[in-house]
Image 1: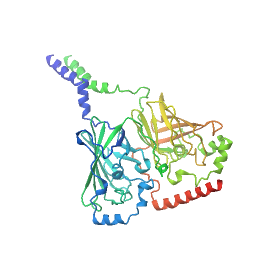
Image 2: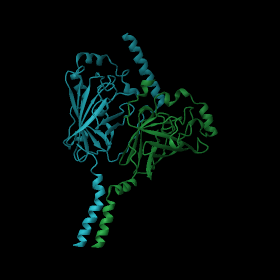
Image 3: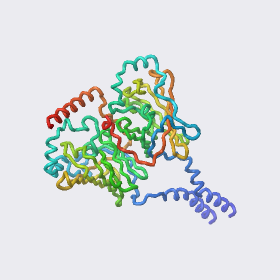
Image 4: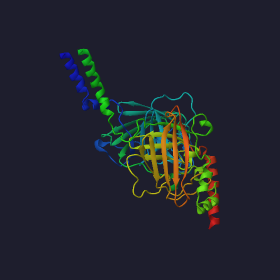
Length: 224
Length: 255
């Protein structure tokens, strides 16, 4: 009987809210919400700030040469076309809504023309065969509190930066997204790899502030 | 006896955190409110044998019968080529897509449900807020301000605050900022389909409200097929330029 009481006491302790919280902390954090990328001038507590600009990409000679031939009036950003995740996530004031549901973490952009939607599949690998995609094929998994997104299978339709740097269909993105400061911010870190366009992988970091407001209707065409 | 008591206590202790967690606020929601998935419009032929039947499938005809004279005149004066914003990959609101193309992701969260249309460039996202009423004076937008509440197993969605820029259907039927759309959404046939019964009112543009019913089949996978409007940029530019030129010429004629 004494044993039974000890076991009961132990198990009862595990049922306390604090323990339940501890058990929950092993589950991925809830990153549902609306977020906006902070200005490059903002420094967060601990000295955290955006790093990397898309103007200094380590382009291969061929990619540099190609960039010079690009008509900047054809920039997808000027004609309300999708910019692709690498360029879109780097922009100042980009507003996103994250909606995780079973099997998918959906990332909706307020500017739908430029950002569209990203669907990060969390319960499958990359398909063996798939047509190239503007937004690429994204799969995600949680490593502790970090959502790790692996994206490949890009078409070469989008650009890497405002200067017209092109990527190839070999572009591969590894993104790490994690909530910091009790979920008040998201840290977004991406490394782009493209053997045809970049001499070495390139990484930038952006911080996104969680907003209490709703996401709006940002119609690109109305700003033309 | 001791063993039985021990098992009982163990079961209680293990279940406690789960029981506590499940008392999260779900007030008003039916038991199976999570309809997460990708849904595709099922037309009459695809619904044969299910007992389900869309109502007012020829929606243009239905709407035109309800238009006030001025709205009918405006419709007749409107060019389906030049004034169809959706045809050139611009926003065209949420009236036309669901009853005609009707493919969407259903993404629920605690306070809001997002219906993300496959034609995202043009129809965008229908965000249904379940945690608040309408703002007092919502600014006019393409997709309006949508709020939802549960009536049993049915989600009732009320949308107001539309701008008057979109058309009600493909024949370019106009509406005003007074438009109100009510949708009654529920799962049917064990969750294989979503039924949406829509009522559209507009005291300025319509003689009376019109209604239609559509069914959307839940797909086996939540896979979202990428859809880029104007994938071929060259063709699109040419097409868009023609449409805009025509629009410009016609606006000059009107003046």
